[in-house]
Length: 109
Image (cartoon, rainbow, N blue to C red; front, side):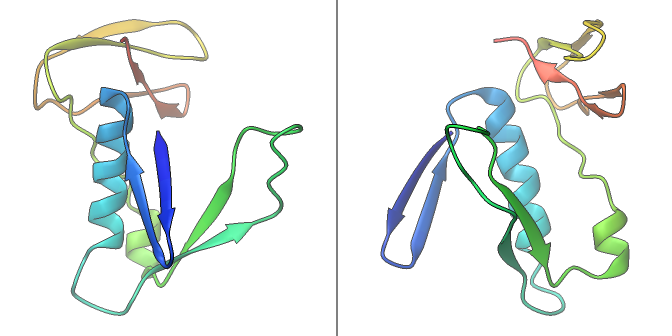
């Protein structure tokens, strides 16, 4: 995922199909115009030499929105795999990408 910062605007550009699907799910969760404003707030610290992941909390979600698991659909016919148990599965374009071992399966690139 490429991230570009221009003053007070942040642009996210997915580099893989799985990133595009996850960015779309984030967009839907953040972009619901009904209700209050939502924002991303950093959690903890981000030190690239120690951890490659920056974590954020979505503020402004209703209790129901916070509990919802986004439906991420396959952008094209592909195989997906579980990073925990290595299970693979074929999904067709538009079908929901399944969960396995408690997390979303990844698209095989």
